[in-house]
Length: 107
Image (cartoon, rainbow, N blue to C red; front, side):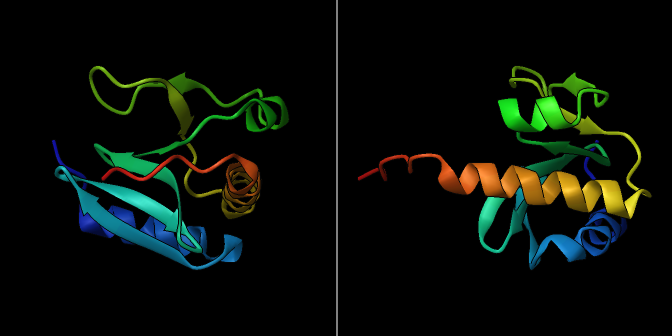
């Protein structure tokens, strides 16, 4: 089941305190970018954030689950109504991801 655009827009609005949030349709679902950095996906109207050790330590109560069959576990955000927690999660995730070495581009 594909995600509903209204849900995607709501999540993006909830995350606006983290930076400039943009969604991009990907394979029938959505990828989320904060200030140009890919950090999360929305699948089946659920928000999944890229996991990092730092984020998992800061938010140990958040469950992990794969966003789709065959995927690695992401952090599952069950309460998308908690704007403050989502903003903190997105900011920390993006801060950590920015510091990671860039992957080489495909040719």
